[in-house]
Image (cartoon, rainbow, N blue to C red; front, side, top):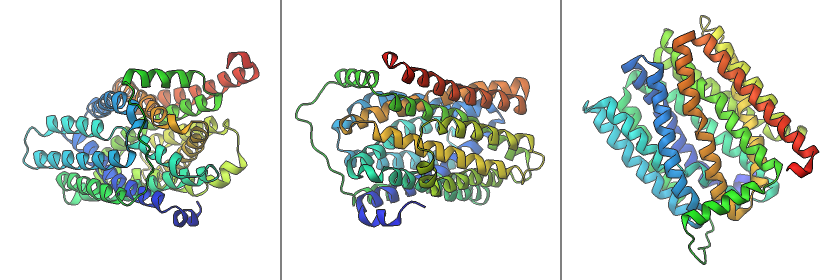
Length: 405
């Protein structure tokens, strides 16, 4: 388990983690509510994929502008403003949904706005870690980050399924809005250093600096960026799978919360043992192995969909593999990125992570319509595992031939 004394030694990090914990609970509740609302209204896998597409488009456009300037912004003030703005947007969504005012249309609109508003918040956490955490504590900090995310996901997803089933979608939206407001209040108590830049730089100049930095960066940083992309490649169809499998079961929205909760519980378990795994397997080559195992475990619930409860077991192990691969990748990323470039590189990584999901979700939705859920899952996850090992082999050759690095 990550060192508990670390949270006592670094109170600012504790406030940031607590803020993330609350906002992620709301996000998890929101995830269940949105997926269930869209699928219940449309019964369409493509309609589900449209949610991911809208979120990604908004995220990319917002990240290009704000992300480029993130190293020059006051991280604390930005996080507070982003949380409060997100809370207002979700309150408006709850209002329109409750009064049935263009329900599906406004849901898509507010999902788009929410993604644009909170686009760079995940990158802000990496900046905070780089600014207030010593290098010797990076694995511990990343473990707490993932563990806090996973506990909040577990709680939020289980709550989300229950709230949607018992109280309705509107209450789930309201819960998310409240979580954003509380998250903003907690960030107020964190001490996050900020040194204003001596000279404001144009967005284009900042982007050029970032591209040059990435081009000349070392192999480990480049690999860590690619592996985070592949982790999300494998993860993307899992949320759609869980929705479709649950809808066909007798558990309905409650089942979606339980399945997502098992995935989050596995991820939490992975975070608890991440320090031991990182100490034992210190080479980055462990990541594609973990990604491949996650792809395999995500396929098994489809095969076992008629045995719904048994299918929860491979989801749990899938969560473990995804969590470990993400923590190890994040640690390599943080170690190999300079502090004054962390905001821009984190934003670039977030954009790179967001590009595959809409493409994968649309492809997966189309394959489900053409070939069925089993064949579609096999094709997509086998592709993700294969690409992960291709990345490993590509960079291994470049390390062996330094002139190509």
